[in-house]
Image 1 (tube, rainbow, N blue to C red):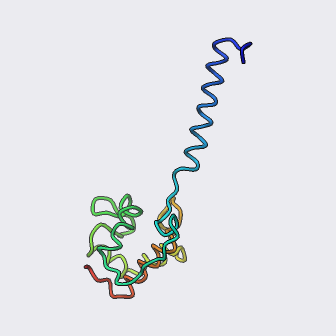
Image 2 (image 1 turned 60 degrees about the vertical axis):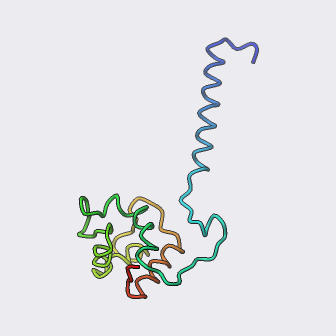
Image 3 (image 1 turned 30 degrees about the vertical axis):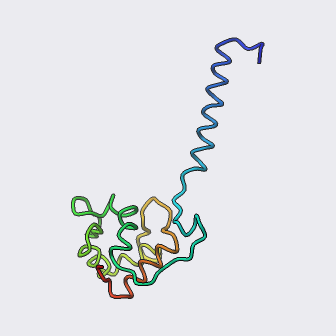
Length: 128
């Protein structure tokens, strides 16, 4: 290293810094649920809209809200989410068994989040 000129030293430092950033970013940002991270059991008891709303906020709002929505599916309110379920499109989309695979361009929802949504639907889609 002592034989390198100042420009080469700066270039080497820059390359090492870039490699560190790439390694860190490829391992630090995972879309894991708490159940995946901490090995918690997936609680699907007494699911309500209030308890599952965050799943749709985190994964669906960018494409399915009142101001911007695809395929007439909105997920940004209790009523619109119930309507989306009643179309018959939402459940196959989040399970990736239908024509559409949601969330588009992202990983499949965690099994636990899918189970929570399924439990909510099976309970009659209660609000609170």
